[in-house]
Structures are given as C-alpha cells and as structure tokens.
Length: 198
Length: 198
Image (cartoon, rainbow over the protein chains, first blue to last red):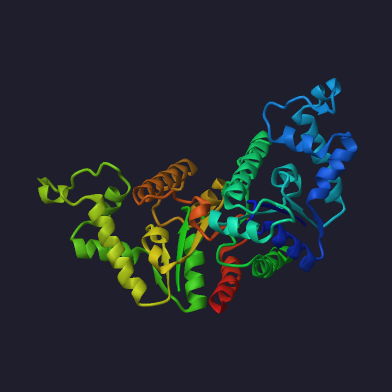
C-alpha cells in the first residue's frame, strides 16, 4: 500500500507521516526523493526546487559560468525524472511519501492520499517552537516564510495539473488544530487497518 | 460536545451521522431544525429553503393570494431564527447537527466540524441505489438533482458568510470513496474518544 501525505508547512504533517510510517512499519520518503532526482540529473537541489515552483524556469548559473545546457532541461523533464524516482521507490513496497506531488505522480498505485492543515496561528506557533539554530525568530519573518512555501507548493502542483490541498484530490483532509500529530497517527493507523482488511 | 456534519448529497454523510450519534449516544438533529423554524415562523418549509438558497428572496405566493407580509421576512430573519432554534437544541447537550450551516451558526460551542464528500460517480450510484418510490431513476435526472442541491448548499452557506466544503472551515474532511459510512463511523468514534479524553 502506498500512502501520500501532503501538508501545509508548520501543520505537523511531517511528524504525523514519520509516526505513521513507524507504526505501520512502512518505508518513509521525503527529502530523499529530491536528493535522488538531483543525483540522477546532476542538477542542484535548489535549482530543481526553483524550476518546479516556477512556470517560467530561469537559466541556472554556476558561479560565473552561464550553463547553457541547463536551459534545455525543462520542468517537465524534471517532473518525468521525479516520477521515475518515485515509481522505483514505490515498487519496493509499502511506503509513505511526503509531499512532492506524490498524490498525483503515483496515481497508478491508487494511493491513500492525506492532506494535513491547520490554522495560520497554529502553524506560526509550531514553526517558532521548532526553529533551527540561528534561524530568524521574528513572527513577521516566519509568516513570510510560511506564505512563500505555500505559494511554491501551489505553483508546483499547478504545474503537475492539480490544485494543491483541494479536498477532492485526497481521501482524508485532517486539521491538527484540535489533535496532536501523535494522536492523529493512532487514529489514521486504525483507519488504515480497516482499509487494508477490506 | 457538539459535532456538525456537512456533506455532499449522495456521499453517505447522513448515514455516517446517524451511526455516529447512535454509537456516541448523542442527540441527532437534521430535518427537525427546519421543521422547528417553520413552526416558529409559520413559514412553509419549502419557502424557507428557497429563501436561504437565494440571494434575492422572491415573495411567497399562497394559492392566488400574494402574501405581502412575507416580503418583510428576509433571509437574515430566517437565519437568525434558525440559529435560535439550533442554539436551543445545542443547549440540551451532546449532539450531532447535520447540515444547515451548523458549522458556522454554532461556532460559539467550538463544535467538531466534519465534511463528507466523494466522487460524482459514487454519489450518483449511491443515490440511484437509494431511490424513493416513484422517483425518476434516469442517471441524467439524478445528476441534475445532485448539481442543483450542491448549488443550493453553496448559496446558503455563502449567505452565512462562508464557503461550503472548504477544508479550512472543518476539522476533518473525509471521502467515502474507499470506506463505507459504517466503517467511517467506527474510525471517527475512536477519533472523538481521544478528543473527549483531552
């Protein structure tokens, strides 16, 4: 069984995904997908992210050398490669994929698709509670970051032909406003047991 | 605890609500709200529905007598009355409210808000399986009915100031595409146990 978990930044979706994978004994893939795409394409991870969240990919500049060959690597090529990478991982068996348009790119596996969200206030307080060393701790900066990441995810999914976070693309949309990711993992675990049984 | 369940017509949301109320031992309110509003306002149920799903309420005509007094009963009055009725019911204790904008009208009770949806194909087959005696069984007619009811619910909620079915207005949005309302009731029952415990 393949499960995809998409989430608003700061919603606790990644924590939920990790806990769920652990409870189920499933493989867990998030950043490793991007790393694999970067390795196979010899492209920089940041560049890949930029191309995927931009409808007009800009040419990549390495140091002072303008890399012409990169101009031909379009977003669609990267999406194709990403799908290939995900497909290879999915074939290894039961897994949870976090983000990266897996809800659509892995469609042929009929995945169970989850979307995690919560209020902006909760997202803000959660991200401020989990600041990395040296990260700007001002509310204003974090709000800007949250909105920026939302915008990028919307754009990336639009490029893949679907609307990020629209409930019709998911089997379950859960808010973490009233329940912790830990408790939610228990609930969804029980839910999935019923699905697997059928 | 107050639970509100909104649902797409044909999604099985009403069945889910009934089962959940039974499992929890909660009061269950759906059509009784409209009946109560009709009784208290001496207005016809169909007229109330029409006013609530129309941004330009039309005057009500009883037989051939044009009822002028009705012209003054505007949608906002009806909403106010509906909220009063719901508030009275909510005060009786633990309950599940189905539809009627309860997710917003009962906001002060901090309700647990559920939205139930599924694919159009599933809704169609579900409604055709549950036809009433003498009801038109043509797919085309049922599809038209589904779309019409969606449209009315969208309009009613817009009048109440919110977007019907937008996940941000709910704590949980669940699709009945892969799981039956019966099994879903078990899952949500467990979920609510965790919430009540906290």
